Length: 123
Length: 107
Image 1 (cartoon, chains in turn red, orange):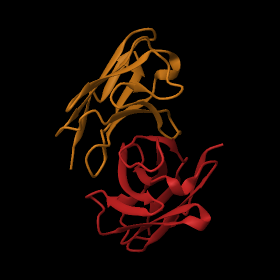
Image 2: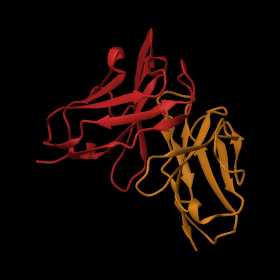
Image 3: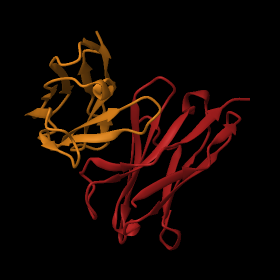
Image 4: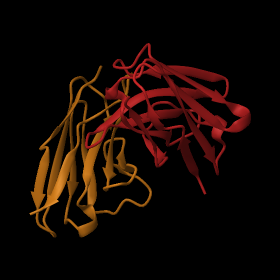
């Protein structure tokens, strides 16, 4: 079964950093780019970042969060990480990781989504 | 950044009726446009990609059309499970972007 499972959310005070994880199973994880998408409570979807696959680990970020986000992957653990720095209450959201339709491609829609990890930024 | 604008924000439709949702891009995205369905409490589900190609498992009552900057999603005869929120997404230009969503509600 193809699965993405996020973790690392919780309640974090403003100004701090958080690292979210996305673990994949049931497919050749390291041949796929992996993206992060968030959804604030009652709001729409916001594409945040993507990291490439195998030898092509290029990264792209949304303009709204550029400079505060780091995305990386650990091939040995089939896991992608998203670090968000200088958290504000506007970062409160459910964070999903998602997989593009095909391996080795960026310009694809997302056909596999994790259920998300909830982050609340509050003192 | 490519801004995706969806209309209407909410669409009231009776079961069995047709629903037409619109998505406009602020610059061309060629045909790299996807539609997702999101039911309450669930992750989004890919319905349509490349403007009109149904994803695996998408019922034939869902159809997509359009190119460049204007796109539509049509649900030919709404079933109870279709009442949900629908998002469009462009994946042609960096950064990829989503529309604000259209909520399809029971009339």
